[in-house]
Image (cartoon, rainbow over all chains, first blue to last red; front, top):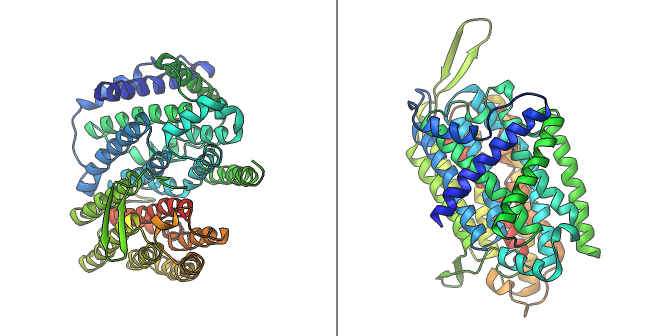
Length: 280
Length: 218
């Protein structure tokens, strides 16, 4: 399991690098090499590290460890076919981690990133809607049961496409340069991660790589079902290509617009789930 | 839906009150525990404010009495969250949830700013109103099934609980867990004290996450 965890982290970083490269090419820029995110992580691992004088020291360091810890837990839950509800919980708790990153340093940029993280809670509700739709159809929230259900009846992607779109939007809200990426937009430098540098940033990049892999694998497992390993990697790549197109072609929204659009999407999804619950 | 968060693997019985640990409740409990330890161990940060119109900045310090009170409230909030995560009783869940609401009011209200205290007052009213559907939901569960045990409620042998109960419980939790939004509204984040503000957000999020499991089980 540990080699797979390491693979997932580095492959997730590679996917983020591909995402970045694709956005650049779509916008007719050369862009960095696709392994840039891996190089970043390695570079930060060996740079000098300290804690800002104004920071809450224990919290400043702990959030990095918690970030890695929760996504490692999500990875194990996913691989062992545990409850989808736990992955949902971990995804939502990542918001608290972002909040912790932002507030712990005392920096105004980090603070605004953290505050934006709290107010963008609307982005999590489509995930709950997606989980609810899956529960209505499969009668279970265990990932192993969901895979078995799809082996019998075919991918849920075709049965409940709007729920799949909801999860896709949730993943979209978490990728860099997304229209909904208000927590780390450029007017607040790097948002919640502005003051975490050196080893702390390396830890954060590691978490981001693992998070990307887990979210993409969750989408594939829940809406497509069991695939051969190479099939999973290729599907992840396809998802990243589609995400890169959305990110490259859509402007980054202001916090107000981002929350408004996510709330509207949530409303539509809630109506869809109510419809499924009554007529599905 | 039985075992939405995985099958329980450990029960702790205190008379007729049963606490149970499933993979889901244990995960949430551990997170509440970790952040409570962080609240105990952390000192608040000193926030930087840029002075506009000058090449200068200032830092904000938090006074010792205020820090002590907010830390006490944050620890109490962490303990209440832990209780709400693992309890196997609907009434106890409501009780812990309302305690989380009260502690969140305390964390917010301790900040010496008129705007923040106004927000705390409004939030307190919402939390107070939230207890009505919350305990009302629990009362209807007891009235229709004769039990408040989540384990018994998840069995199919009991009469079905009216659907409105689920709405009441969610509405109650929304009332109690609104603190982060009120804190954002009052720009409470401009006040130093990251560990305490985070406990405010975390506890609200945790009760939201637990009520999903509760609603699926009743």
